[in-house]
Length: 501
Image (cartoon, rainbow, N blue to C red; front, side, top):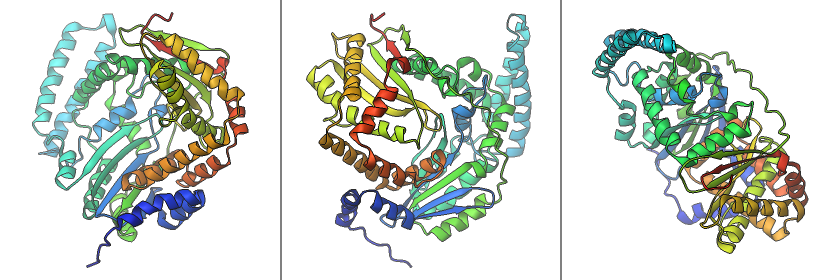
């Protein structure tokens, strides 16, 4: 039996300062020497880093698909599909698959007919709608009696799984879990079945769940409503303007056949990256991945044409009338990674709002006491296409959103006019390096970062490239980028509540 090394706490905690001292050169060595990269014949990309510090492993599956890949009239499909993939497979989540399948075929026919009748609007047959709805409910009850609910969750939890979850973004969809390292074959079996042949159980009831989720998480929460309207204003043509959860009329008409076709197109091995970090043997992991995932056929990935966002030629403003504390969101169009200007905005974000010594915190929150909270974020709402640099905040009463906006713009004007001091710039660079390295210090953080940049940037080694670029940025670069993008004609402002009209 292989002896498991006992981690030395002093040695582990010494890694971050050493990497910080030697910068991207040390990180480059770590990545190049320790991350093992494989590509199966079907195009599945696998990244593995062995880290024998504890008997655990973190596993990420990232599919290169998100809300941005949906077509008009089908918004919310990627998010809905994420929900459906927790419903199980032919062997997981069922008491009698053959009986269940017969019911589901009839259920889908009935649901499609009901949707078609409802779409007739005023010309719809009310009695027919009632009868079809009654029939659909009856079929759902019969289906439910054959389902083992939440079996994927149960299998992971009973086998020591933690932090199991999934997420859908504008650019990617992710599934992740941490497990005892001797349970990796369980993961391979579950995830390969979900990828090969998921069963979209409870399709119509889950559609109703998403509708309720939208009501509770968007319609009823002023801040979420602010962001939805902000994006719909900032982007006039590009699909980043659409909400990930979908527009209400699209959710109400989720179609089984379309969702299945979306799954077949984008949940293909040649559109997927797996990252594994933890107490594993790379050859053994690859043996299991080839066994379980190798037979899944590659697909031709057809992406819809993505409309480019036209250059903004004037400030846009939107007011959201809701009974709520005032808030403000502001955004400026900018390029995506891996452009140099995008990396400069990472510096600008940190200068303005990272930590207690940041400019916003010192001057607007603690100094002038005009804001309860104020933050900046680079790369919103996605990173694959040109996106936004955003600033958002909540004024502290009795100050208004208009007053806070004025102070924010004054701080941004300083970035356009005054070079950043060398000491302040170096402090911010150190913060960015430290945050990166801290994220990479855990199995979950490492697997997440490797898989994310492999999908979005095309190469996990973008982590190294990014830090190298950070080191090269000068005060002059910040002045140039601030003047190029942080100007009125490139700005969108959304205001929630208050009386700032």
